[in-house]
View 1 (cartoon, rainbow, N blue to C red):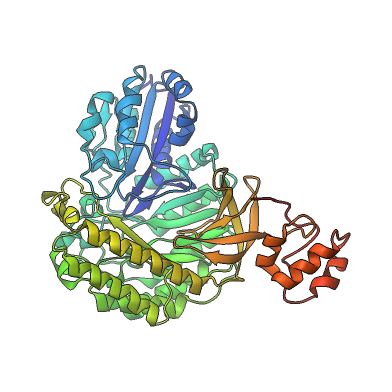
View 2 (tube, helix red, strand yellow):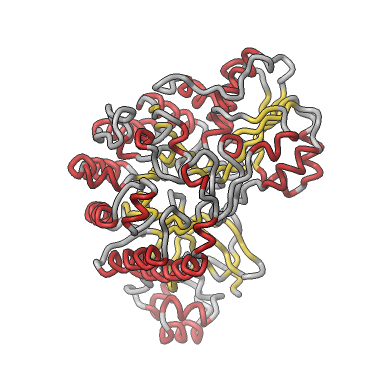
Length: 577
């Protein structure tokens, strides 16, 4: 116990069905772990580091790690995807790095330790035992519970299978508040850091076994936090400097606060609990810049339309625009729905999309609608045939032809996790239909572009984008708003990192849009770029009469309407490709 005076938390990032921690998102694990330590001994020195920071100088990281008493590694991207802000730790890194670190007591925590290790869909997750020899303990229970026992009782009495045995997750009230200050060590702190917030743990559908592929049900009987505990955590994070929040760690935000959450597969929503939560957050974090949600079960919406509509209205009242209700539709094949015990049949899913559009598809101040659905498809499920993929494509076509909007379409090959129903089938289903899967992925990308063209047509102005990365090979700067599933904007010029900008959208691709920072400086912007934003005729006039000494001179050329705010001699000076 006493020997753990210097602790290093290495965040290898997490991506779970209910929970996300790839930058700029910060998941709950590092905060809870730090809080659990400080709840026992406030004198412990804790260093937080991301895996990307370690990669930049791996030799220095290995040297530094050997100076600590305790090393906690967080890992577990079990919903594999493509990331702009960072790259989760790999199995190879877990197998090699920590073989070379021998001084500290080494702990592996997170989804990788509980369920399995895998960063690529369509594969079987490697079991935690594949890296067992590199760690002193692999936490198969809940990391904060184990770490608390480790600091309170020592190595001999701390159990790797420990969980928080409390239906209200009461210890998290203290852990989350004390651990909030760890955020100041995150590389995105003070910029676009988004704190993931947990409202409950587990899935209501655990009663029926849940979806065949999902790990969330493995948490067992759902346990939900008290509203006041969640609000106090947000207050602590806000006081520590966080301004972006995502209520993302739950299977279904619509059922948070339900009195039937752990009793029924389809618990009745409790709008008043949602109102108290969001109102409370707004009170303690009055200057927040982002407040978004994540998972929404379409099955809840169609079974309890009245309560769900009230909750949607409450969320829209208190959140910030550009929000996404991620719907785990998974498939549009009724046979696959039944075989995998999924949430909704196609007509029900469509109804849920219609309801969210009805109340959420209205303009927000940042250029995006208030709240739109996001659609998740999972490939490689029990009972899939070639017909499954045709039905999936037809489902997307129906949504589009009805004039509805979706913010994003996510298609992924399932990662086979141990202890799930799908585990006994392995990868043989997805391997059987690889050609059909690739074809559907192409179709989904095409529909994604069509939806983006409808959602943010040419001329749309998106506001408050954070510049994240410049790619010198592509000669493109990537920028996004802070949010639940932010839209990536590709900008064909170099912009200094850590700038907050507005952009003018001029083109679309399947996963992103292309835009220009505004206002642009007309005195140094090439004709080709000016043409994209003001048209060829006005662009040629600007080129022929520049340089302009004032915006008054400029307005004589472009007029006072139509191009307002797009050009200014004090605007962005970019090096264009």
